[in-house]
Length: 150
Ligand code: ZN
Image (tube, rainbow, N blue to C red; front, side, top):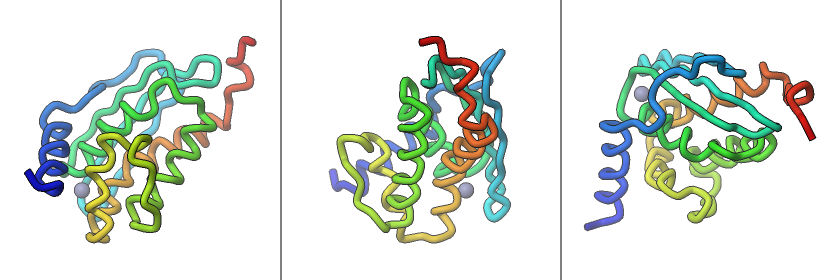
């Protein structure tokens, strides 16, 4: 199986069986975003405990790339600190735009998205979930202060 075929398999698998699909009740962060170019819509809810993502869900509609990316994103951010996530979003943006190779170990399934860097229209699809995530964290205002119980 070629690498490209393997990546295609991973994307389709996330598209057909999205991980963490749905909405969290009593979420701390709730954010929604659209990619008008393609008609993709993603909604993310996050539960934050002690400055880390304790739980995450997404729902949305759109093309396979936007959904697969969102599904992978939820798996990648669970358990990470908000600071780590901000760095990771930056990293993903560079990887998706083809500006950076990225660390295969850190990327995991997300490697499968690297192919979009050749298709500028698709980059927006793949980035949507990450942009929504970033927006949500910003709106939360780095707002882990009142939640910290150290
Ligand atoms: Zn799309």
